[in-house]
Length: 92
Image 1 (tube, one colour):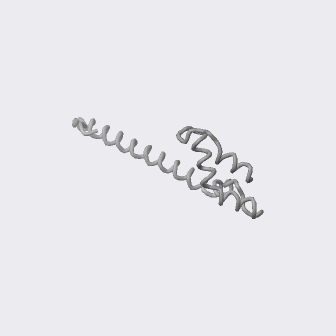
Image 2: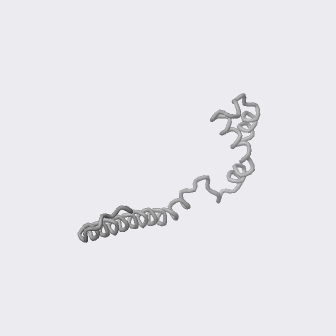
Image 3: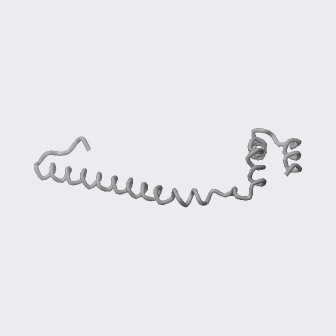
């Protein structure tokens, strides 16, 4: 681990490049990376958190799609009703 951080400190990558940003990020996260290696209970992956949040994100996506479809059905029904009554809907 120390060899990696020594290499990162002495790296000649430009700070604005993708490699430079990745190296800077790794150097800034050194304490946290070392904690993961020292404590065997900590996981590097956040798959558990991602899987626990996924049902809420999918439900939100379906709810938004359903609201859009209902809104469009209401607009169409209003347009048809105004059209039957001889009023042209100009606000749509």
